Image 1 (cartoon, rainbow, N blue to C red):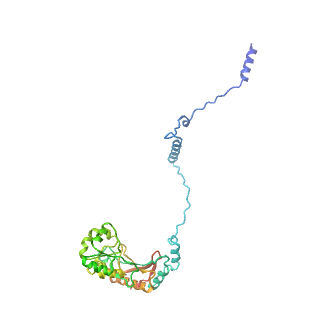
Image 2 (tube, helix red, strand yellow):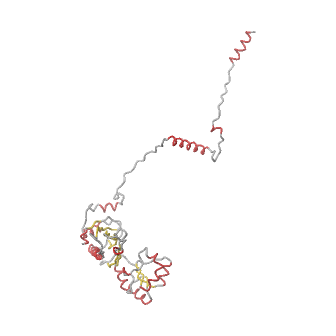
Length: 306
């Protein structure tokens, strides 16, 4: 009997035992995954990344961003065009040139393909906030401005024929007002008689910012329309200091001869000197520079203004 029990026990022990592994599902596996929405796989992954980020932020661990290689800052001259840099090489840094030398250099350093304008920039020791120091005037350049000027005349019927004979491009009143109502401006200078000035009041916001509003100081409000047209065609220019006390004015073209440019420059400088306010103390002219369209700036000796 004991022997039989022992044989049965041995048979049971010899039989293979099947081991069944039981694993508890994780939170991620237990939750259903949707195709879209907050329970989608992408949304769950983004939530995990956000949670990990908040944990790192709470623990005080900062994320180190990869350092980007910083490029050295180029100088202002290096950022210019090749033509400008080539022209600037002809100038000596820090040198102040005489008026004649500056004119010759301005003609040489113009690298553009069109007939560039020669520009004069004069820094004055004035404060434009004061009425007596708000320098403003007009003059006729001896050699002209080199520009084709379109002149419009707003006058009475008696002066319209005289204006057309003097070379006005547009002359009249009703037709001109119709163009202004449409916002059409086909002129560079507007000449008006004193009797027509009250009618231009409603167009001040259109003409004023463009510098086209007639003004007695510039000679564009006059009873002698023939003279005003002749001077405008001959090269009458108007200058005025800006808010920083600098006068910017075109005095001719690169195609002008050196003598023509010098004559125009001397006429402008003489006009500015004649308008020196009585309240200005010390040096009236602080600096003079000459340049061309898209060309380098040339420092001019202040003796040109003395």
